[in-house]
Image (cartoon, rainbow, N blue to C red; front, top):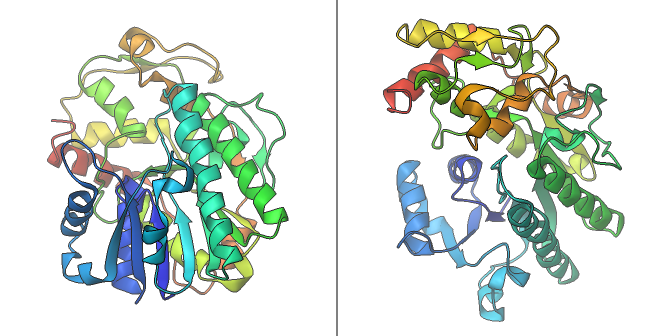
Amino acid sequence: MKNALITGATGTLGRKLVAALLEQTEAYLYLLARGRKRMSAEDRIRKLLADQGVEHLGDRVTTLVGDVGEPGFGLDHADLARLRGPIDRFFHVAATTDLGTTSPDAQRVNINGTANALRVAGDLRRDGRLGRYVHFSTAYVAGGLGDHLALEDDLPDHADFHANPYEASKCQAERLVRDAARDGLPTTILRPSIVVGDSRTGEISDFSGIYAILRLWAYGLMSRLPAVAANPVNIVPIDYVTQASLAISSRDDSQGKTYHLVASRPTTIGTLIEAAREERPSLPPIAFEGSNGDARREPHDGARSNPLHPLLVYLNCRLHFDVTNTTAALTGTGVEPPVTDYGFLRRLVRYAVMAGYLA
């Protein structure tokens, strides 16, 4: 890989992908970013590199000032002319992952952003400058309210099982990618489940997702979980997602395929609660309720009015994920399937405590 274009580089997963590409390949990177909170796009990229400890490799990075929500990312011909040679891999990572997001927000970033990315990819392909478009979707395009086996190469035609606008928007975005693939665009689709901290250290740059439930509990805002302790929770360490993404996207035979980056043997919500209590014995009492873990039950206490409560549906998700493509692609690469056992969960909580999130 000589050149790569990445959207969403400043996000939780994007920054890990950038660091891995710089450290493990010789690729020159073009990172799309926009100014935010009194920081220019260039400053945000410099901070990203410093935070990841790869600032010494910054001479292999060019910042493209743009916005996925704008046609052509808002780039002009001069910006595109800065792309040296073909783009071997175009990683479209940018997305809003807020489960409580409004439909307009999800439309602008997840759907329109993907449509814009596909147009840029199409332009590069017509110029003979695109190797592969790699799209980061989610395993929950199958619908968090479902109870079936989600196959890697399938995409539902309806949204009956979608639990929130995020799932629905990512499903629609993936449908755009599949349409583009049928028109000849070389694509690979990657579907992580709920991304959490590093498997060895627990480190994560943004505490969202499952961490939000732990914080509501830790601060006494949620004393009952509308689930049963044995319910599975499919979380996946960020280092596995990063390394699996690089390994899969580098394969010639991964073109036109979809891959679930998930835990084949997911942990349970009960095990997570036990691990958290082991790390923080001072956590307040919490009770499980519900005999069958009905995903459509309403959350209780402070969780009902809290904007983070849409995540609670994943404490009752009965989806199972096919990993046939992923297993075949990773065999012999050294990238092992994720283990999300008790020890791993303790490392996640320990890091959240050390970082002050669960102080």
